[in-house]
Image 1: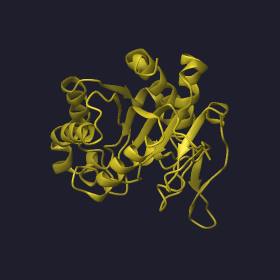
Image 2: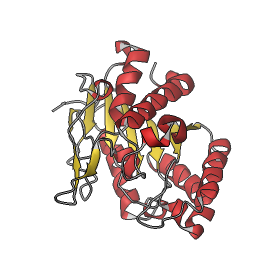
Image 3: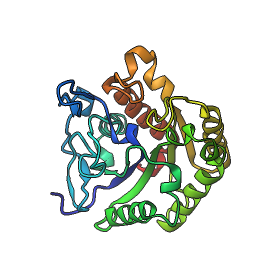
Image 4: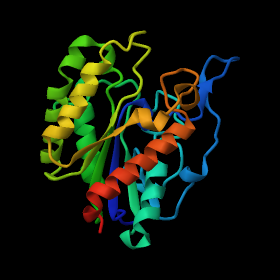
Length: 264
């Protein structure tokens, strides 16, 4: 356990592909999802990378980062560790330690995250508590929208609601300039709808929010995945290990090229 907060704290929020499903597949004998335990080189532990647990204490970060957060689902490799390792490689050891705060919940809708909900209250609390012993939140990563892309009403209100969510969050954690990087979604929630019917509305909303709000950038999840036959799990809804690693590196490159002054 770490007695002090890591210097540079990053929030990982959204739904399943942020929590990490890399290496997770269905066991044919039990019909339950299991993680194969494989951790790629890019996601290996590093003595300079810490994780904020569900009990709100700092410990050395290890995959799966969301094991005690997204508790009703099976978690595997996500983008958090490859992001942190890549950022350290790019910025160098002089930036100090990195803290990852897992907050993502599989299958969640944006309406479950907006101000006034329990999830929003817990998110704000985790962000504030993570800074209690000296560190500072330097970035917020958001990978969500698959659930909303399967519901017409939610997809059409996504721009308004996401903009308000980011604005409220910045105000309530007292970080008006907080860097935010969101992911342009790749897939949708197959459990809600077999059709990816409203993806265009969500994509347009994500692009509009990126243009409208300051210090918001977007990385394209489709680039991280590449060939869908090679980049998704068997369920076709979740990023596999390779794609999660690609996404983490994209987070690091986007953050460093746009917001390096926040950590220098």
